[in-house]
Image 1: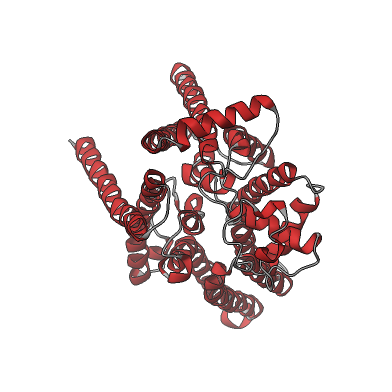
Image 2: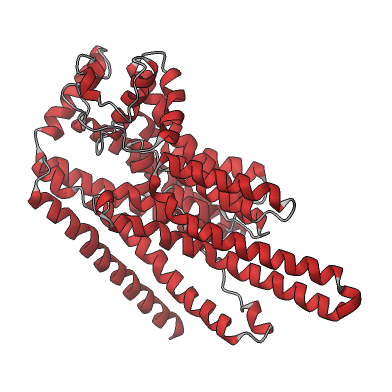
Length: 466
């Protein structure tokens, strides 16, 4: 047993080093797409490196595209190996200390991307300049556009200088902190925004841990890393510095507070405020409001039933009181178990509307963020069967089957969402043909990958039963 464990740890080291080196290689590759108007440093060594990156990748589209595909394949291979090996080890995040170690591991493995160029998106430059408009020019980025300040050198490498801030005031307020801490230095400010994206992911990790603690359920290291180390997550949220975790972490925290057992009337309004704050950073979590109100109503109803049963125990008898309390607890347990899947499906819906430009890759992290809560370590017999509620038990059984396929669908989309950059990289521009190809790769590619997952799973199960 000890020999087997030692072997697994050795393979884990190899997988971790391979993943780390792949992200270093991606960081080097990313500078081939640095905007020609952007100079990160005048240091002669860096400038020689930047010139080499442009000459090697920017002016060689086939090499740039094939190397990107190779890096994506290698990163997913390393990701799958790390998650699989941690699953075999079965390490539980039982304490804050273990959570801290897991977060430090994530920071270490993803750290090369902190120094990468945001090659696939210019959005972070808009975040920076919108904050600059507030602090330096006293302007409202929701009413004025960056083009009004075209004399500012920080607009030279921006895209979408003709549009106002696309998000509401919550994100604008948050973005002031990394800008102010940059002290007017562009590179320091740019690095601060990358750190804030990383901090958002760490806050998310803490919320997921609290969610499982709330339900007295185990959270395994592999479950958390299944989201954090997914190449789509680290490339879009760390390297490209998208702000989505500052929307998702408060939204998930709102549902954690909603289920607190004590002082519900205090935590309910705080929970709602957190959800509204989340929506003020990006509007997408507004779609969770109906689920919040339904959950709040059901929680309050069952909570009141339990109180009444307890207070009326002398009248209805202790046995009936216990039955009612047990029924209430089991119904709440059922609601809590289906909540992650409900939230994940709800957050997928905004990806299908025109405002989301028919699915930008990093938007998948909204729905994908529930992955650690969807990954069951084992399937248990429904406690609802014990209550002779076959309909609800059947619903839960069907939802388990759907949930498993939904997880595979999310994983398939995480791969196809990164591969959708291929047409743009090969042609160097966005045009109707490129956009059509991206949509085809995203959806058709995801379907093919998903079917491949199901086929491999079927063959593996068939072999296991033989």
